[in-house]
Amino acid sequence: MNKISDFLELLKAPFKILATNGKLLAITASIYLFIYCLSYFLFTSSTQPLILDLTLKVFTLLSGSAHPGTPEYTELLVAITKDAGTFLGIEAAYIVFLFFVRLFAETAVVIIASCYYNGNNLSLKELFTTVIKTWTRPFVTMFYVQLLALGYTSLFFLSFLVPSLILFDHSKILITLLIVMAIIFVTLNLYLSIVWNLAVIVSVVEDTYGLSALGKAREVVKGNRVNGFLLNLLYMLLLVVIFAAVYKLSPMMPIVVGVIEFILIGVLSMFQFLAYSAFYFKCKNDMVKSRGLEYKQIPTAPVVDEDLP
Image 1 (tube, rainbow, N blue to C red):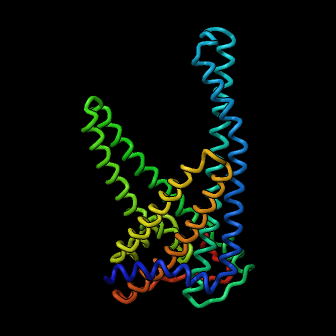
Image 2: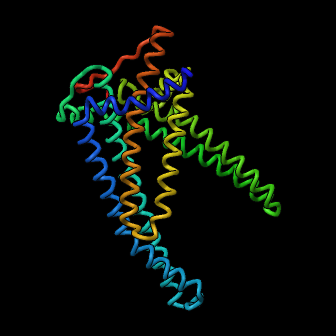
Image 3: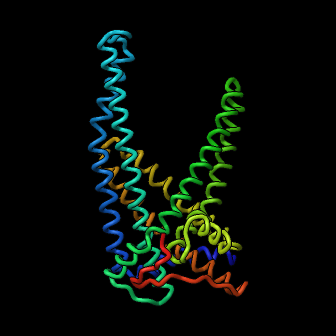
């Protein structure tokens, strides 16, 4: 019961922070959601004609209208390669841009939450200045987290690939095995994400980053992994609900529905940032009570830290 009540308190924390620092959070959320949705609209508008043109060229190539060895075939192949390269370039730039949008939004939200728990007041100008001086630490940590997530996903992809090749002719056994492996993959990912997500919070609140932040996050979360797991599970389930609802509506107005989807995901992400900030302070308080340890926090006022990378 204590775990359940603690988890429910974590869910209430974002609303308590919003009640105290509503103006700053509203401004941060508005900027975040506006950039988030605008970038999606621009990405979709720029790539849809490219995807259509690429699809038509591939269909023409596969239909046999142009025979191998002819100039038409060569020109078509070169055009497909060029379009594919352009699309991948735009998509890569879009992913990097979203990474930085999320980075600055999460840094700002964590600073606001830190002020709430420390009893400090923060103006909009001070928030902006502190984000500019602090963002490099969570950037390094998020980069490490992305590498770890990529390595974890690649490992499981290979694990899925091997039985798929071996049991290709035994569909029932293969499907059952893949379902079990998928459940294990999701469960482990939710478990590992506890430290990964908390490490970003640690990088903002404390004077550390990268592998050191991951180590401190692993230390501070001891005894509280259940709450972190439940937070991740709830976030994943809400994402599934959003994607399922959007999937049914997307054929009607794809761009409009896509923007709505991004708004919902953006709001959910803001809630996750706040909930994990509350989770960090709970873990820290529990650690202080049980071990008598305390981490040094960075000031939330606009003061330059000479040790920033």
